[in-house]
Length: 212
Ligand code: 0O2
Image 1 (cartoon, rainbow, N blue to C red):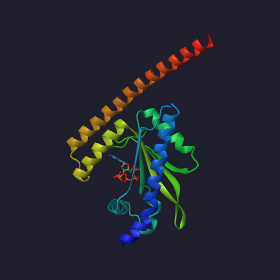
Image 2 (image 1 turned 90 degrees about the horizontal axis):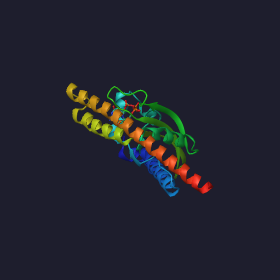
Image 3 (image 1 turned 135 degrees about the vertical axis):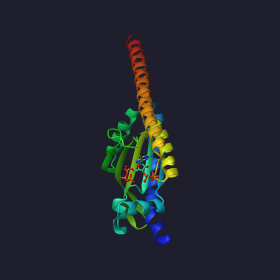
């Protein structure tokens, strides 16, 4: 396919990634301005490279005319949270928005991938306005903690290095590291609960003082 044609196909996806990134960043700001804890720590986005789209189509036997329907992650957004509990909060925030319709979800927190990968994925429908009118595209939103992101980033680069043929000893060490990440997220969650308990009791105390 010609470069020009790829450019015009990917253009609405580039717009969607930019818009969605701004919208999630704005959510962080809104929380901060209202003195609220933000369940979103960080947002990033990317449009899948043509090479990566073609590789996926080949691997999954997707014909060209089905590409936009079946390659669901041409537009990709990654949302990083501090704590595991924040993931559900973010998913609920997305669910109640009128500009993003959830098509499907993949819960790799409940169903951890064999690699050890954990993350919560949502496929959404999102409409952008182009010079030819509105176009509804799909985007994949990955929601994960900072710890899960650390593991996934390292594992992704090792996958790239070994091109799908990861030596057993490396895979085993990654699997152990994944267990350590689960323990780390649990430990951080327990600290979070303690902080929230402390904040609640100090708020209750100051309310009591006000009542007196
Ligand atoms: P990139 O560079 O992020 O674009 P597929 O996993 O490709 O067969 P599907 O059904 O779209 O097909 O996948 P899924 O499970 O929803 O996840 C796709 C994306 O999730 C991947 O994108 C990764 O970003 C991430 N992911 C899934 N499994 C793993 C894993 O085991 N390790 C890591 N590090 N990331 C994972 P791409 O296309 O791989 O790449």
